[in-house]
Length: 246
Ligand code: PGA
Image (cartoon, rainbow, N blue to C red; front, top):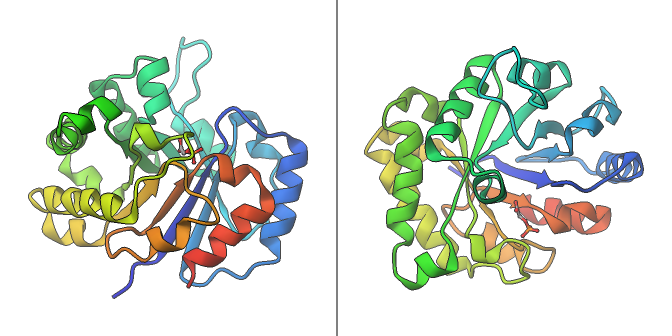
């Protein structure tokens, strides 16, 4: 059985009220079949989206704490109140630029899931790790750090494989490279829970665009994409949505 596909837009620190309007208007013209779409804008734009829309909203980060003296942080409950139902956790930019550790990411995933958000856990290797043939080892560590001690969270998660060398570089992984790692991730998770592993959504991310998306979506273990740069262009993102439904 083919999985329902999932397309997630990661706006990063981009976008404006104007982009909210143009993306909303473009997507309103599409009927999604077999596809769920999630837009993850900066926090401040979540409330700019209409209550009625044919896609879901997500955030790009969440605090591991539920409330308190954590200046600048935002809790999972606050995200839900701002209409987000998904949250990206452990994006490589946050792992690198904000020094997020595997332990912190595991705590964030727990907080998000317990509050009722669907976490999108990002994993992926650097170019150096790939060249040293450590890709599988790195990804296994990133997955185990979150799920080995809390396997019950797996059933509520989405996982995005994002090779760091492919993010924002214009150089996507080839469909074969991505498929090989997705199959590895599914096999690895099957050791924790084979029924859940066969159903979990595995997204590919890293320079996905209107041209390369179809070949990626054709791979058996790729269930959608996490799209950065190309999600900021309404027409191109709409094209990626159409390809995901074919
Ligand atoms: P990109 O970003 O599509 O611009 O490569 C993807 C991501 O970082 O999620």
